[in-house]
Image (cartoon, rainbow, N blue to C red):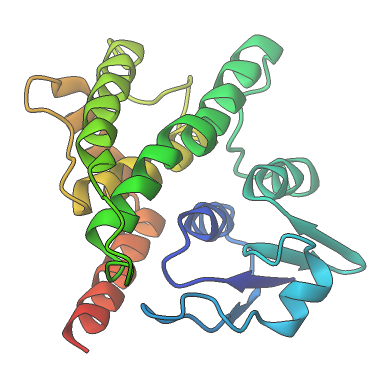
Length: 217
């Protein structure tokens, strides 16, 4: 198994954590990235395997897959040991929906913060005022998550993809200056529980170190 991976790709982080949680061995192929050129030029294998030219791309035997949600679903079906989705169809759908929401609803706000607070400003001096709105919308998402976690250790009946996908986004938001509000204790306690898991802790440590090197360069 091979994973084409980006060092700061939130979607690749989800897959790396899931592979580690399932204790699956794989070859990690890191694509080129820089703060100025981003992923250009694209890795030729990624271009060949994914028409969107994006990571992650998973290759397992004759199968190649892109899109982190599809990859997580494939890993669950192909390697059901150490499950990351519940068996009950209703509980499974609830967790899958939250994992998708992390990508489709949380991430656009986080991308706004990445563009405004991490990458160098564009030469045309484009307005980055959308950051305040993104922080506000993330606050509302944190509040919804806090309610969903009431009386629960995990988003579902057990730790799984909903926790992984949402944590990756919440951790990125925190690094970008939009942490969960202090008045939402369920979210803060949940983030601590997720980060205490060895695969997540290792991912956070590696990403933090890479960020430090990048910002110091």
